[in-house]
Length: 377
Ligand SMILES: Cc1cc2nc3c(=O)[nH]c(=O)nc-3n(C[C@H](O)[C@H](O)[C@H](O)COP(=O)(O)O)c2cc1C
Ligand SMILES: CCCCCCC(=O)C(=O)O
Image (cartoon, rainbow, N blue to C red; front, top):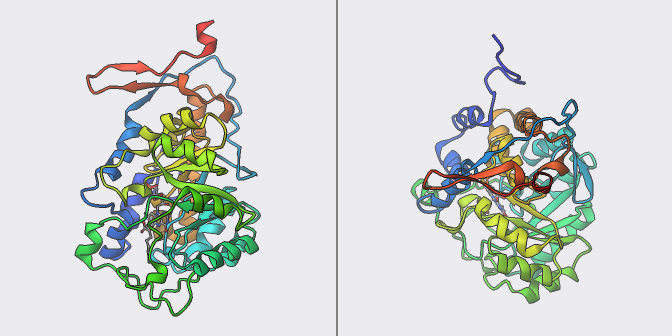
């Protein structure tokens, strides 16, 4: 019997991995990672949005070789996937962000480091094997702390600052409330001064309270504070996307923080087309949220994203087997994506487009998004 391709005797897809990984973590940690805010409407919507699109494949194409490579943050990457910032990788594995970065380097993709990393940015940069590093910034009230995060990232060779805009206040994560979740008291947070107590999420220390008054002025000012590219992470409205381009940002990451902030917010895949239209090719548009299969990557690209980023899947890999587990996630998604490209008749990433999708509507109708120019001729 053909058991299919796997690098592991238990994991053939990301769903296999999720189940296995979560069982290895303490309940409160698993809930922190997998949970969203409130009733998880947006968390679910991120996944379900992908199921509403179906493929309209083209055949009679030469797919003997399928080239998945593309360019992200100025680097050639093995496929259009990178690692989104997530806090505290040491919750999942003792090698923490080092393991994640090594797996990214092995697979030839880029990584964004969280403000709440447990590993200093220069150490992570040193493990990335020349792949691009992004630094995520949760802008806090103390400008000295913000500037040191920016300066350390720039000194470590990071090429882009991803400013998270969807978190002026932390979302209401009921699982964390119920579990009284808090990071272990000895957990390091090297982005912050040691006298700041970050372990208590409801800390009253105003230095690390989120800047709840982020403005376009402040975004413009950031451009003068670093040579790194400035990206905004968490954009959902085409109005904000257009204003971001006018403010001079270098790219937009469509995200709702994996459903962890505003519950009831639009799913990222549903938000994407209007943002792509508003941006009109002036800067790259990337997306994260709910990506669990190679087919999800393909659909996001077909709807206009140039690149996707992974949140929880990477943490599941890390919890499963450290660096090897993250590599397993990336290899699985790589193989799935390459196959979906071949089965849709795409030999290169540039051939992926909306003509290969139809949308399933609530009344049961399935409507092709558009006929390709080729087909109209
Ligand atoms: C445990 C966890 C921690 C996260 N920490 C951060 C963070 O520090 N900064 C940030 O901008 N986003 C953070 N995110 C959001 C991710 O960057 C990303 O937007 C989201 O996980 C994508 O959705 P997905 O998990 O469905 O792939 C976190 C997500 C998770 C699951
Ligand atoms: C120890 C502080 C964790 C801050 C929250 C990180 C985050 O953005 C998340 O979604 O969780």
